[in-house]
Image (cartoon, rainbow, N blue to C red):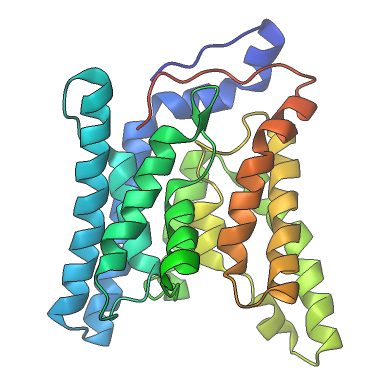
Length: 279
């Protein structure tokens, strides 16, 4: 993984991001372990059938194998990618696990990995792969996003905080919460929803595990604050105006699209550092 710094000012602004880039394999291990625990816990708690386990494995294997083949097409050698495993895990954790149509567990990770390799700017992902695969599957093939393995809170919270700490993602998390929370509270008051229930509309798994994904996020600290607030606002707006669509997934993809512009504006036109990997 390379982190090519353009100027001294850029280096000072993005030192943390370059440190993260060098630690990506270890960060992937933390993420894989955390999400795997949540999936296994929910499989055990809800006594799901073997069909659920089959769907989870299908999503993971599709993502890992296709990603390896795409890397081999480019580099001439099949290579395992921790990022692909995470995408497959997250898709498996969020899609309704007991559907008869197993086709979606192949399609969603396939679309995720294709977006990762084919839709890129400055050598970086445009979209969060898992989010892209989930939304495309939801819209095109009626896949149901239920966040079935994104509970319970007493597991999501400690594991998620650990991930945020290791990813140095506090700018993203706090800016999202400071934007989204007041909007949901005002919404709750106007609809006679209690304070706790209003705050409960914020998806903790999304904030702690998906928002902090670094490949499609801005690099500069100032840009991260704007990006987190931007996604926080759109998560509320989608929830309010288009409740039939998963608000957090769509808001994240809108934020991904805006990320290059946000980064450019926040860094006064400096181009982002290229990365030498698509892991």
